[in-house]
Length: 111
Image (tube, rainbow, N blue to C red; front, top):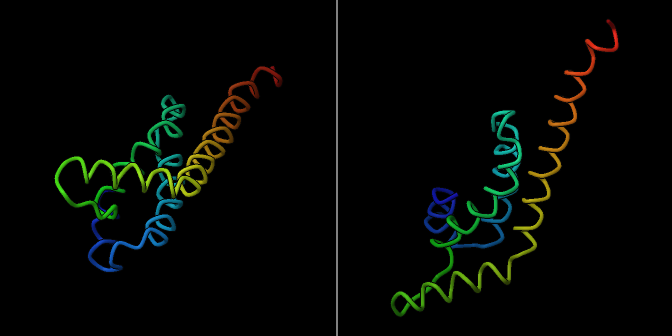
């Protein structure tokens, strides 16, 4: 997401709408690529990635305090993208976990 934020800053003049649109497929890809044993971490790591990538597009100035305040503002004003991506990752993780549990129980029913 940091790379996406940097590219958004370079190509789209730090458009938070574009950043949010790119965040949703990244959240889905995260939930799809994580190992089955680590499915619980997908919905947890997605908001962290959103915050890490939001730094280049936050547009802060005025030193460290200005950067932090700009990042906090981006996180609070664009929480809808954050919630949507987290929900996407959580739903994919839950479905993957249900499929894994179903596959484990299938041989027991046949036997």
